[in-house]
Image 1 (cartoon, rainbow, N blue to C red):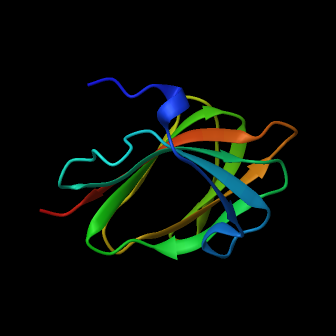
Image 2: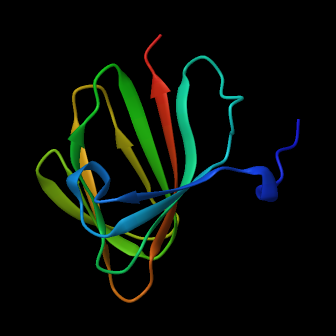
Amino acid sequence: MVIQRKDMKIEKRPQMRGGTGECTLTMLGGDTLQKHCRMLSEIVIPVGSSIGEHEHTGETEYYIILEGRGIVRDNGVDTEVKPGDVVVTNNGAKHSITTIGDVPVKMIAVIVTDA
């Protein structure tokens, strides 16, 4: 199966998870996600914007950083992330991400539910 970019759903999410600004999500998997994949999206977080701190229960989320730089708060610890980095947030953990610098953060977000 091939899903062409032109056929992917795009959503704007203001103050995503209590964050600031408006994030843009491109749903990479469309409606064809597998049983344990709850989300497969490209997310763009504009300069000065963020995804607010939130907890994952019964699932793991991966952020694969493609462009830009950000600060990830991972269970209360702030770490700078850049292209090539992967953030893993396991069951019961909390995280947030804020863009820093003058380039938006572009990342792939994948949420896999527990079996």
